[in-house]
Length: 404
Image (cartoon, rainbow, N blue to C red; front, side, top):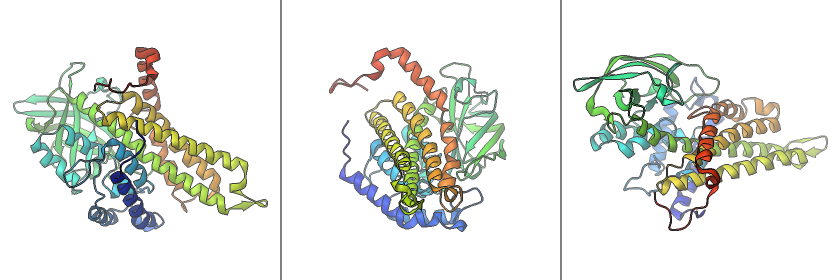
């Protein structure tokens, strides 16, 4: 692959960098800018979002006639830059779960579905959630275990079951629901669209978590007769697994793109402190132990960027990039935790306090090894590819020989 980016993508990156520096970073140091769950206060978020729209930095992930098509490679560049701030992705409408939901709807929804369900999310008028994960003994990383069932009655589907850890559910208006419609191993799941005001479901609780939360939290849902018209089936009955695959692959990678930005921010804070802090007659930056810590992180971040770029390039040329995304997800998730931990160690008590965003990032980072597939699941995926491909696992693509 060619590691050069286009001038258009570089201009976007510069614009994002300037926007984050001027409009978002100052808010992190203001305790009143946070909501009770550790995210940016929604009234402030609305103000920053209006500025982002005005500067052409809004929903860059969707290809539209009035803006350049940056592809997944361009997203990697832009998402990394916007998540220099912990608030960046939300301010530019590129945060989970809306990010992944918009890309799925843009890829597979009908024109009428896009107008009703996608456009309001794209415009920032509503938020959304993706309801798939279930409590034991239901489905998680293994969708074949899914127990939430949608029974077709006339021209409607009646849904019963439970979901949990549904990100953003408390503030969401538009939901994508994955439910079982038959016992077929490959075609037994269906994706549905529903609105928060429809009867027959409820939020049981907002589940408390270790780290700061996305807007709308992580919720447990109960379905007890939710009726969904057949016109709100996404991609067709029995194609829910396909919809899930289309959504989760790129969404896992966009997580990695954003986490690289946070990892770089950790190094930035640690490097600045090490340059000014002295002890026992020597600056921290001049100590070999600190240099080794920072050098190791710098290398880890660059490895992560290469893994993410390879996966993004594969997606842009039509591949599912399953191996590449799994490798990026494992590496970058662990890197983020290491970067936050190392930066806190270098900053000492200051890093453990709320005087910097390091403790915020540290609490947030632990979920990275769990969301969208735990490390062990992705390693299992890689092992399966290795068993199937053998030495060809590490092949080089030959120019002109690729057929998506």
